[in-house]
Image (cartoon, rainbow over all chains, first blue to last red; front, side):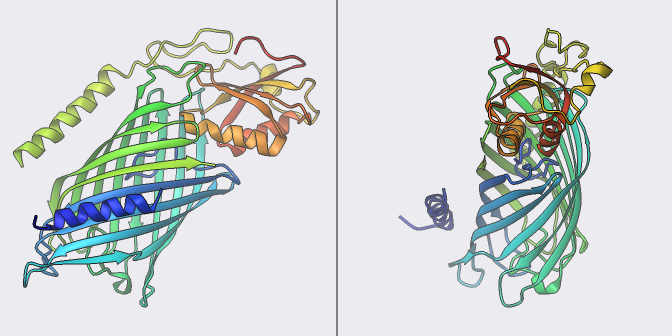
Length: 278
Length: 143
């Protein structure tokens, strides 16, 4: 059987699954204004797969990316937490010149983010409204050691069974930190991400005295604009289970609109993840 | 592209259907602590008088080892884990139980008797709001 790039990607995905084993109310690609309380850790691991079309810059005919995103969030003091994201990535692309496949593996960058909750109102037992500011930097892990500061804000509102998250995030990219492949916000141009998520509690319809967990349907709209002129809108439906300490999530990403010249178009993406609070 | 559009539109319409038709949630909970929530919408509104609000503040240790706390902002199961952890770690609480239906947290303070201010601070640290509190020398009734 001929080994295609899809087979290689699936193999890499299986490898990553073997390698690795409260952001409550948080969907997969949109932040929430929630955080662990002081002294509490949250560990989250997400496995993503994205398939892209031809890259106009490198000439690659098709590109696939598998990412194991490891996230640790820690509550420093009340209303302030720090998040460290370490993505382990496998990229496979089909070379234009001979049709062969090249694989690139490693940690290209580490992201540090501070989340500061500046507003909170809890009008009832379940309902809440929160606003948090986000600030941090992405550090490229190679000899260039490029640094991309980023700033953002996220609004979270829970109304009965409905959770809403709105996030705006601006990244000041630099040429030094531009990656070999720009897959959205990875180039030299600054990037503005506007994300919205609706988290709807599927079950239980109403909490009981014994409720310890809940199932959610999540729907996200993820918009990315780069100052070079590229922009896209993705739709991300998903399913999430959240217990007292554990959470599990599964998600897909479908492009709704893409106008990109400096990077490949997304075909589709899928992701699974889990998180634990301790 | 047509298939993709169909899938996306179906999902969006499903979502809208969910929002418009199924957002009724459960009926507002009955009981002395929960009334006033609009019909057809989940979300307990704790009725708190000025005297009851005062129970969440004070520097005198609580009189009993069992506490019943009416807490606001417990939007999801994982959100409330924070209050378990803060009450355990800050105030040595045990026998913790969260009732999401009533928006109530039960705890036992067998070793040390904290003050209402300390309990209020632990709740705040958990990212939640203590509306009022009751204490007893014996466990509260059926929980």
